[in-house]
Every structure is written in C-alpha cells, then in structure tokens.
Length: 507
Image 1: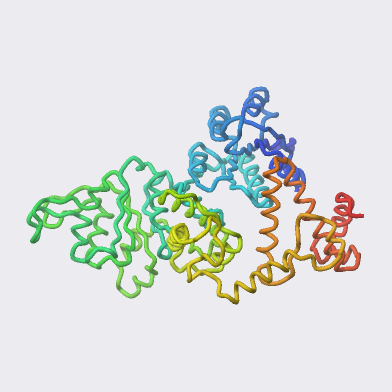
Image 2: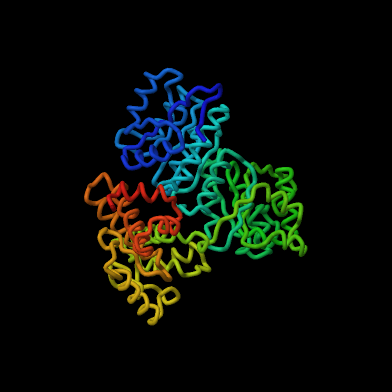
C-alpha cells in the first residue's frame, strides 16, 4: 500500500547515503517497489549541502546512512543532522560487528541500526516503521551497545546487542542467564562500559569459586580482629565497586544466609563489614548472572524468592553457541587472530571444510571452548591453512567422514549433465543432499571474493544475474521447458518468470 503524508500530500523522499553503489541500487529498487520515493548520495558532504538547500517540503522523510565512507563519518553526519533536524529519524548501516559504533549511533539519537549484510525485506520493514514513526512525530530514542570483543551477527546475538543498548543509560539491576562459557561476563562488562557508571570500577566475583566461609568477607570486607587471621581491616568487593558496577557471577550458588545480606544491601543500600558495627553506604549497580534455573531453585527452597525478584528486574538471556552457528566462522577467525597476536606468530587461516566441521560440533563449553580450540590450533596445526585433519580430536572428522566429505566435494564440483544450466558460469549447483546449502554458499563466497578483489563495482548485479539465470534454467530443465510449471516449482508468478527470462536474455 502506498504511503502518504497526513493530509494527503506526497511523501518526502527517503535519503540514502552510501559510497557503495550496489547498496544504494538495491535499496532504491526495493523501496521503489513499495512506493517509497528515494534520493541517493555518495558522501555526507553532499547530504549536508542538500539539507541547507532544501525547504521543509523538500527535505528527507528518513535518512539511511552508512557509518564509514571515504567522504566522512556517518556518526559525524548524524550529529550535524540532529543539530538542525532533531526529529528526523536516522537509520545507521554498518558492516562491522563490534558494536561500539552502533552504541555511538544510538547515543547520538539514531532511530535504529542495520547490520550489513542485511535481509532486504527486514530493511524495508525497518524503513517503513521509521516512516510511520516520523509521520506520527514519535521518534524512538533507543540506544545500542556492546563491547568490541563481543561479535555476532546471528539474530539471537543482535537481540542481545539491542537489549544492551536499551539499558545503556540505565542503572537498573540486570540478571544475565546463559550456559557456562557463553560470555556472560562480557555482557556485564558491556553494560558497565556503556552506562553512566563507565568511569567507575567494574568488579567481578564468581560466588561459586570462593569457599562459603570466605565469601562473606570477600563481598563485604572485614574489620581488624573480626576472625582469626584478620590482622587488618579489609575492603570487600562492594566497597571496591563504589561508584561502579559489581558483577556477581553464578549467583545461584550463593549460600542462603548470604542471600539475606545481599537482599538487605539491594533494599537499603547499606551493609556492615564482617565484625563491624558501623554501616557502610553502597553506591553500586549490581549485575548478576547464572547458568541455573533460579525459578526452580526458588521452588526447591535453595534461593530466596524476594532476592530473586530484586535481582530479576531485567532478564537478559545469552544464547548458547549452538544457537548461533552462523557466527562460528567470524568468531573462529577472530580468536585465531587473538591467539596469534598473543603468541607473536602469523594468524592461521581456516578452510571452509574445517569450518563446516566446527559448525556441526555441539560446543558444550560454548564460546570459551571455541576460543580454547583456536588457541590449540594456533599452537598445534602444522600448516598455515587449517584443514579438517588438523582439528582437535573432539571436533575432527572420523576417517569415514573425511572420505565422505572428499567424495561429496568432488560431486559438488562436477557438472551432472549437459543441461542448459551449464551455460551460466560461476555458480555450480551441488547434488541434493546433506550439506548442499554449505557447498553452494561456499562457492558463492569464493566467487564473490574473486570479483570483489578484481576491483569491479557491479558485483551485486553480476552475481544476482547469474544466480537468477541458473535457478530459472535449472527449473526449466526439470520441467522440459514448461514455464508455468517451472514458476510454480520456484514459488514465483508466471508473469515474473516471463519478465525475468526476457531481462536475463534466456529466450
């Protein structure tokens, strides 16, 4: 349905700012199909000049800007635009997975952020939502955050980043849940780093790792002579975290009597050192984490219900690595780079076949286990390119699996028959079966890298043309040239397949 402005006037255009022609092209076409007018720019300077020249009716409805361009920063552009047009929704695009830039965008007043590569329908839906917000003059002021070492483009991790962003200007108590090794302390550090307490200390304590009889003193400190061996007064973690954040990891293992003391601190902001008689004021934000089911522990009488509700103001669930398999290649390369830097050696590369095996592993130890594997590979793998046989025993393929992989790789490279599909170079469709999507996606990635390295600027158009041509010709081959049946199998309309055949020159 076409969008109009209140009162029936034509809608102002959506301004797109990106030095990448293919990004501009694909957004323009997608928005045009939705009857959303556009105007494109290649750098921030052009946008600022156009804003100076435009009157109220000629300006943008929405600004969609890349974050890094040769002609200037999208964040600088955001700041200047917000000075002159504080109500204009700005969507920031970024190809980078460390979310510091996105945090800056949100703290600068951006409407939303869009990670590249993005899903086109979702991008259009986001722009539609921004249009609706701007027409109602209710611009969302959300914030985005994450620590540089937190990587992830899986939807589950993007949800985590968004949640961190929304909490970035708050002092509210947060409960982080997730399996061991999933990165709960990294999330806590990100919450601290992007909070009003960022200049204060971040103090972490694992309540499960400290003996019960020492934990009280560790948390609250002790006075001199409070117990045998207490030669001097000692400040506890609460005092060390004054003005900052205290991260209580594995809170589910805290002894019941200490839970009572913790509840008192959270309730009135005061505590006593062990053996002390004077209360100490605590100006501390508490972030708790657990891998346990605290609701069940409450039912079992092992955890105080009132403390649970006090800690569980905002709950943030961190996904297990097996729930974000698409992040494994990115994380693996990152950890290989980190390990190489630590050891002072060249970073090792990893083959697609090796990544396939890693993606099939359950990773009971989550991201921490993957980090350890990458460190092991940096030390133990004999060559610069890591092959499946180099992987540690718990991940490496069995001899039978390795043989099957070699056979399937050979099949994927072979052309099955002399069908018209052979005439389109560049993308080979592997036989149907296990691992098909990985095989053709790996081929697509290799082709894209080669074209990008060649310096071409029509990679999107070229690969899209090849993909559509291959798909249509393969469908026509399977239906012996019957277009309507081929369209039905592909899930597209008869008019669409006819138009595509003409556009692609497949007659």
